[in-house]
Image (cartoon, rainbow, N blue to C red; front, side, top):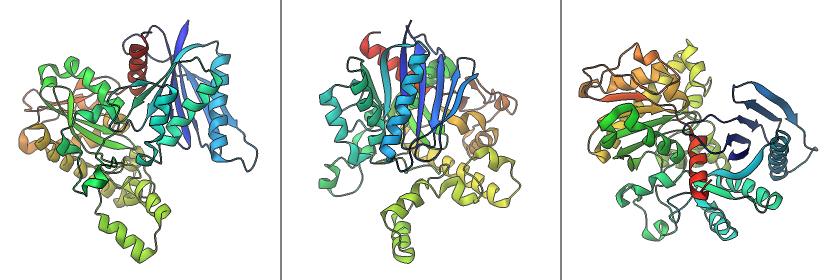
Length: 397
């Protein structure tokens, strides 16, 4: 039986999933796992369709090996393991950060397309090179194996120009410095599930909150994006696990002047030292903070929910109202506290949460009361399946 490999590669991690063909709606992957700690202690974990661990091992590199070589070793180790499972690959689908202004839908990667994708590296230097590296390695190892790039930015290309434009000189905008938005595969998947979960309201004004270590929101009308919280990078918008979310640029100027921060220190400040971790001083993990009695943990949780509720207010304007609010992502799907707190901020407009329904986990369902003026739902996302769907549709598999 032929199968499909899905890859989501970062600088220090590589997540993967393998689906059997033909692809069935919401079918589980037959294998999945990740390689973490690339560049340090590289751990490779693979699981089967039932979640049973098939492999848990350390990938060792010679001391002094460059990061890029370690990333390629990790991918090669994964490909060899997939071959050992007697999997016959028909194609590979990739999560790629940037499609720029050129690509508003998934695309088959040819040498010409790959060259275009490389030109988008300045738009996403922390992610795009790592997303593209597996495509290059696979093309060398399996030159006849079709590969498809699915872009984090594609779903948001339906935003009106006002939602995509910064108030900066036109010559900088012309370089591609715009509000792109990310988590596109997740929003794409949720948009397709909306009619089954919330009925006719799926065609109205809907805000989807993708809350995980990285967090964002998107406002939709008739399932199409009209605005999203993330912008040129995956920093803007909501407070996140270790990222600041939207911040006054003057704070960065202050850090440069007062503390001597350079580009590397500013990047760490924005991406790795802030958010839930920075405010709490304890952890970026929502579960850890919810279990903590420390006042700093409580403040971090309160700030996370407050910032989320304020973003909903902004997106309501862009959407022209609010008929449904959907939670997804690791936090959105699992944190009763966050959902309850965020909806609490919306009580003034008639949003009401059913405490018992809010306890249900692991399935798509509504959690609002019968008299709530706004539908509230939890829908587990499935980005890997969405990438698999686009890959098979594009290639006719």
